[in-house]
Image (cartoon, rainbow, N blue to C red):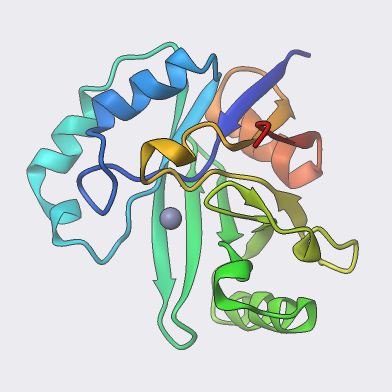
Length: 188
Ligand SMILES: [Zn+2]
C-alpha cells in the first residue's frame, strides 16, 4: 500500500482563502501531494452560489479531491470539518489550539458535539499548520491529525497526513479513522 500525502483542511476565495479552487489545487500538485480536501466555511454566502458548485465540479487534477466543508457548531462556536467520500464521512474537531482549550475541555467538546449528532472521529493537533503538541495527547478519544488550514501562501504545505490507503476518498477516510497514517511538518 503506498503512502499518500494530503491536506484535509483548506480554503478558497469562496470563503476566506486567497486562491480559487483551481489555483489551490495547482498549489498542492506543485507540492507533490496526493490528495486535498477543500473545506470552505459554511457561513459564507458564496457557498450556496451556483458558481461554487461549478468551480468544484470543473476541477481536473491527479489529486484525489475530497469534498469538504468547515461547519460551525453554534452552541460552542467551534469549527468542525466534515469530509465526504462516496460512502464515508469524517468529522474533525478543528484547531482546539485556536480556542485555547485544555485537553479536558477538548474532550468535553468532542463528546458534546457527538451527542448533538456529528460523530467526531479526529482532532487537529495543528493551527494553520503549526504543531500544537498539547493536543497530540494519547488521552484524546479520537485520532490526531495535522492539516495546514490553508488560507494564505505561508500555510500551504506546512503540515500534512501520510495515509496508508489506495487512491480514493473512501479508502483515505477509512485509513485515517483506523489510525493508518502519520503526521508530517515542513521545516520552519
Ligand atoms: Zn479552516
